[in-house]
Amino acid sequence: MAPNEHDPNDEVRHGAEERGAEDDATEDRGDGFVVHATAPLNGGPTPQAQRASFVTPNHLFFVRTHGEVPRIDPADYVLRIDGLVERPLSLTLTDLARFERTSVLSTLVCAGQRRSELLEVAPVPGELPWNAEAVSTARWEGWRLCDVLAAAGLREGAGHVASEGHNRVEHDGERFRFGTSIPLAKAMAPEVLLADTMNGAPLPREHGAPLRLVVPGYIGARQVKWLRRIEVRAAPSDNYFQAKAYRLYPSGQGDEPDPASGFALGEASVNCLICEPADGSRVDADRVTVRGYAYGGGGRSIVRVEVSVDGGQRWTLARFDDVAVDGTPHVAGDPFAGRFAWRFFSADVTCPPGDRFEVVARAWDEAANTQPASTREVWNVKGYMNNAWSRVRLTRR
Image 1 (cartoon, rainbow, N blue to C red):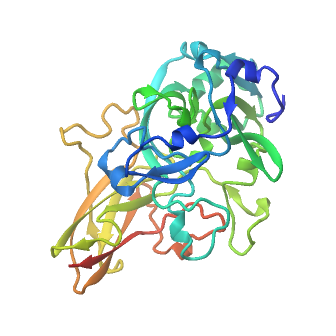
Image 2: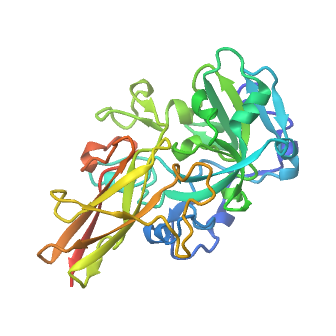
């Protein structure tokens, strides 16, 4: 069956699929959640809410939704595994429970994180104007994708693993399911999960219940929600969201660039954000404590964060706040020692002379990757992967 072909048993097995998520969008999430769209819901936590808890509470965790929001009965759920496999499988949640369970502490980030800063350089047509809301961290639990693929048996020629969700999307007059793919080597990594649990609770509907793909170190678009099908392929998925969207295009090609000129996004970029003080704040003292978070991509740990008050001429080394108030390490119990999760940092800096000044921050990962200084260096027509220095402008009282 082709990826977008209608399955006559689909509605029977999985129940009605609703076109909107107004019930999720109208849930009272408090002042710490910014909504960019309501049908379907797209929004996320403020920087202050992000920094308030190392593991983001489910009701504040950022939501990025394409198309409809399915409502699926777990009792009727079936996941299909097919393509270049020896034994195609149809797995219920009971079937999946026979595999070994595991967990991963992973920061999920949208490729459009910090897009609004790129809008100050040039327009980014047709994309959500994310500020810093599109990143959150959770403890995910479920089953290793590699174990399920091993049970199916990989055939010669397998090179990519495509995933398809139950959510249908309309684009250019066509209606199709959201889908994407990752390289086989990543799919077989032990951190990649078929997750049914988020922060110790059943996966919420808006986050893909009853089952989603979790691909630590990759952008959120590769972590398909409401998982319907896994297909082992020789080549990457030809779904719109792999072949045309979520690609990094060179500048100067207009609003509709040639897909062949771009490359598919996979691993997240090294990035950081100053959460406190907030941009535009007034400060009273001669010294100020800067707090924020930093994260890497591909499992590369953050090893350094630096803060500057003079445009990067001199840097103050930040300290990592790796321990909770009760003395427990933030990454306690994580099988991967936190290498797929953000790190909190803080730094005390002396305010420079004058009434107004800017604080900037940059992070480094263990492979010596760091952040470019300017958004002009990373601007692209889709507004993806902005990892320029984080900046806040402050005023002295």
